Image (tube, rainbow, N blue to C red):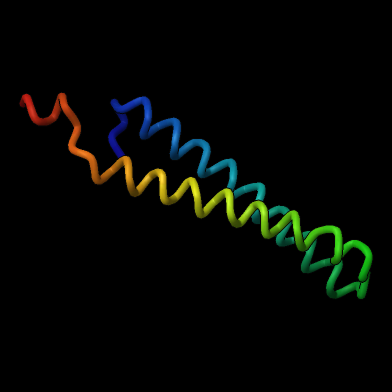
Length: 76
C-alpha cells in the first residue's frame, strides 16, 4: 500500500470496513448456530455470503490496483 496514493488508501479503508462487517456477521451467525436459532441462522447466512463477496471483490480490486505501476513512481 502506498500511503500517498489516494486510491490505495480508499481501497484499504473500504476493505477494512467490509472485513469488520463480515466478522460481526460471522460472530452473530456462530451465536445463532450455537443457540439453535434456525430463523436467525437462515437470515444471517445470505448476509454473510454477501459480505464475503464484497470482501473478495475489494481484495481483487486492491490486487489489481497494486499490479499497475504508479505514474509518479516511474518518474522518480
